[in-house]
Length: 351
Ligand SMILES: NC(=O)c1ccc[n+]([C@@H]2O[C@H](COP(=O)([O-])OP(=O)(O)OC[C@H]3O[C@@H](n4cnc5c(N)ncnc54)[C@H](OP(=O)(O)O)[C@@H]3O)[C@@H](O)[C@H]2O)c1
Image 1: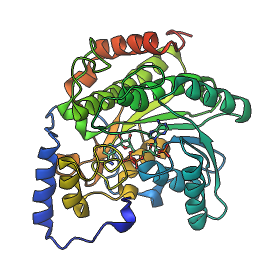
Image 2: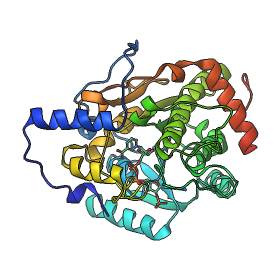
Image 3: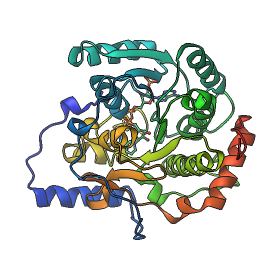
């Protein structure tokens, strides 16, 4: 299993590794759009040391048992927040809490089991939290799977990446909306990926039934996540929900995502393994999310990520948004379709 802890230190010069990162970016098909985004950029060197105290605030992090979600949970707990980690496996949940408590002995952290690829499990989690939490200040829609070689389907019959990465979070956010609205400054941060730059949204085949290309299906799910984040901000503004909705991506970080997706023996896994010394650690990859979730200067409707070559690593900034993700009409259509597919409806505008 790969974590940032066993990444070998690289000996390449900066120019060599920048070249390798660029090559890796091209491998991923991360061709960046050139459209400038008129947003206030975050401080490029922002780090967890700049995070304001989160004492008294309550966060839910999906997929907090490994990778960036674990780092999010640890940093939030370290700054005084109460953190709920939601993922599938209670054993991994216990291990994550133990690891956090090694570094943060007084951490207020709990595990809640949820399978995002089972909408009844997502609704159960929403009900449990609704009955036990006084409010929710931050929801981090982080959990994901990437590019399983064969097309799988969820309990609800949805394509597995669409279900886990996007539809499960859509329903979870709707379920938790009442709890979020009890906060005086609620935020929802949804994770996307540089993979979106080679993706597209096929509203006629969201379940990839026509053809299953693993990375293209992953890219579509993460594009849907980005469009969801922007549409949630628009609907929150129109409906007076008071929620700020941001998006973030980590660049490319050493986590369990490749090993548990295409596998380390795949061509993609071999390329990833040979470059991993030059990638972000999970802690570095978590910075954009933590900024979006906690910084007073973070803005709803903005997409944060690293700004180095191909946005794989580098200083924090505003991430490149592909044109389709700025298309409000397509985002609204995707939202409506998702409500139909999942049977979960958000309040209509104005309520
Ligand atoms: N790593 C990268 O380079 C990279 C690049 C771009 C974007 N991202 C994004 O960053 C986010 C975090 O990914 P990561 O790299 O940290 O991955 P990771 O180490 O594989 O962690 C994924 C997490 O998701 C959870 N999860 C998976 N399926 C689930 C399900 N059905 N229900 C509930 N939880 C589930 C896993 O928990 P259990 O297995 O314990 O349930 C695990 O905690 C993802 O949104 C990913 O798309 C990552």
